Length: 156
Image (cartoon, rainbow, N blue to C red; front, side, top):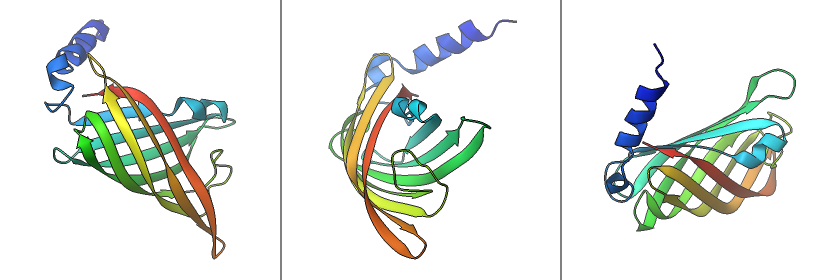
């Protein structure tokens, strides 16, 4: 049996325009298109806890030679204007691996803060972006860096 049509119908019905704002979307799954140039796939799953706060998990998978988990971590986000589906947020993150955009090594730990925003279109196409600063702790030294995230995905 071909499941594509029922799955697509379920996604579209669960992602109606009425849910895009303050309504019922509770989870957004996005990927970072720019990471494909590395080549890596970085996924972020953001779970709404309340009308203004959420937690997100980050998973980076390298696909250059062998598919392997490269980095992972988490974020806390607080929406200070608008709502979870369409608003601006402040947040903090902790991620394993290096602090560069290329994620060249799996060593160390990065932590930092950021400001960003999300816009959920109809039916539920989601675009989000964030910028901020981070510190990379490796070999008992701190190295400064930047957070630049651009995500494209879907809200459920």
